[in-house]
Image (cartoon, rainbow, N blue to C red):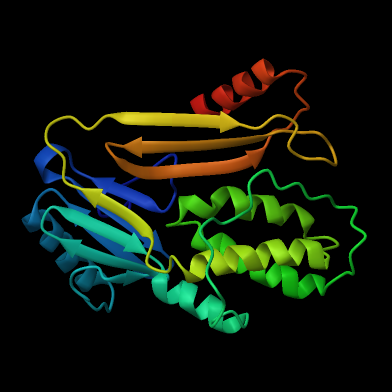
Amino acid sequence: MAALGFNKCTKEHGVYTRGEGQKRVVLGVYVDDLIITGTDQGEVNTFKEEMKETFKMSDLGCLRYYLGIEVNQQPGWITLSQAAYAAKLLEKFGMTSCNSVQVPMENRLKLSKISTTPPVDASWYRSIVGSLQYLVHTRPDIASSIGYVSRFMEKPTTEHLSVVKHILRYIAGTLHYGLSFTKGNGEIELKGYSDADMAGDVDDWKSTTDVMFCLGNAPVTWQSQKQPVVALSSCEVEYIAASSTAC
């Protein structure tokens, strides 16, 4: 990429750019798979020819599927979803015929690492939660609940597994949920949101920060993470969340 005049993005190491303004080409790289976009079709075609001279390549045309993410491009809007991946998860974990629920997790649910319910296979539990974590790439609505059940990987019990199954039941009813990006007019404003609970973890009394950034009306990055310190007041909790958001 450097030999072809591309610069690596300092924040996202799989992204490369070349040119500016109306001659800009942006490249996403994952091993030997490339996503190419740009503001000028001629520049994009030039880059494709340069790559074909260097490597044996296939041009698969307009992006439709990439790393388990389904892409639907229409004039004026693009949607990203993982419906096929989610359906495979339900089949893999025996939840294909389950009854769906309206929310990913019950309101004000509190779980502890110290549970009196029978233990479950930790490897099985980690497999389910790990698979669900990949679904968060296009599903910010489940980021908080999946982050919560990820805390019990070491010694999961039936109590923890029931909450994971609740998430799967929610996914069963929302298979086609995803992200939608519409073409805007003029300047696109970046907006950030943050929220936090107060001492939500009953084991160490740490709080959880939830963050989302939107470009226009489309969410582009989000995070749900336990705070590194124990806050002593609700005011302090919100300041820590705001600081993480700013970072």
